[in-house]
Length: 84
Image (cartoon, rainbow, N blue to C red):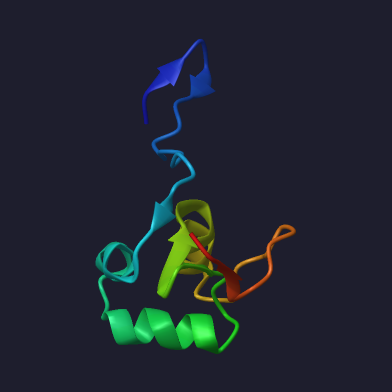
């Protein structure tokens, strides 16, 4: 591992928080849109609706993908609906 002044250089990339569609979330997790929707409806993955379509925050998806466990909501409700 590369070091700078005896400090390890982290090789992880912090995602900029942005909303993802089900298709984008499924691509990130390398699974189907149905599996992502099941995780949302089961309360395992926090999400919100814009009109009729689900969106997942990228940081929530990252946390869910790393652990395979429900992502912490950090003040966000699971399956919240926002009308655009």
